[in-house]
Amino acid sequence: MENDKQLTPLHPRTSGGCIASGYRLYTSAFRRLFRASWPVAVVYAIAMAAMSSYYISHAIPLMGLQTIVDPDTMQRLWLRTTLISGALGFCFIIAATVLASYGFSAMREHLATGDVSRAPRWWGRLDVKTLWRTALCVLWLLLLSLIYGGLTTSLMMLAQRSGLTSLLIGSGVFALALLFLLLPLCYTVYRAILAERFSPAPPLSGYLSGLGHWGLLFVVVLITGLATLLLTLITQLPALILYAANIRSQLGALQGDELGMPQGMWWLNFVVFLIGGFIQAYVHLSTLFPLYYAYGTIRSEEDERRKAPLFSE
Image 1: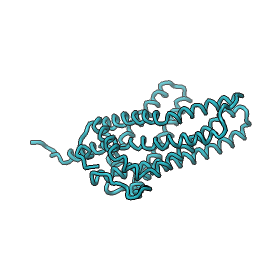
Image 2 (image 1 turned 135 degrees about the vertical axis):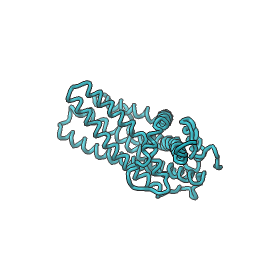
Image 3 (image 1 turned 45 degrees about the vertical axis):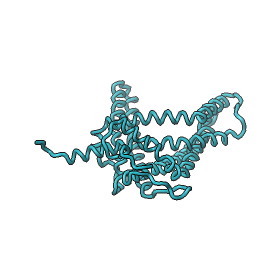
Image 4 (image 1 turned 135 degrees about the horizontal axis):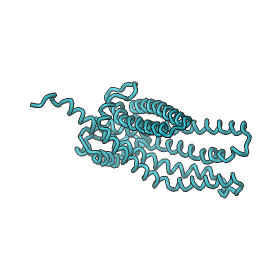
């Protein structure tokens, strides 16, 4: 991939320009990114397939057994299912974090050199420094998500117990406003990971700059999210059809009908979700690149603002 001036990240762009440049960089560097990251994409797909298959075969049937199994046994079953599902979900988050670090590694290299190099070996490569940065940012974001989820859930429960419609509406508006205030973290996380020097502190540096460009970040996140959702639905269509068929069969069996699914269905679920998950890994990885150019736009405009004289003649 040649150094293209049109793909220079530190250049003011509109939201549409950020999205177009991000996908253009991703497609132009895809072969080199794929060569470097495909083993992690396989692990990502395995984690997603195991999590989805276990949910279909264990969690869904438990929902219909609550009325015919004694409470103590049901509590033990739910505890075991929750622990296993949580462990599989944790493995999926680890795989997704490692996969995301490959995207950030390509961005760091592109920011420094204007290019994305080819992995020297066919089994890929791992940028430990970028992985460390990405993992710390993910941990901070997970902690912030837990705080946000706990706060909003508590407010909603309090509003429901009070029976006041106005309080319930106010709690919903507060939760939505708080969610909007978290949007500038898209800029601060990129700022933390792509910086020359990294701090293990919460990725909040530059929050006001991100807040000042809230509209740009909102449009980029919205359009990119919709595009990713559409591509995910297309690439995961066979898995979604199989998923719906399994749910319908399991719920029907709980009501006394025949299972209607062949033996060894768990393995068929696993293989279908494995293939879909591998494709999905690169669909989701593409989501990072438009925000890379949104970061570059905000950073370049902030640099120009600091260089501008305080008073014009």
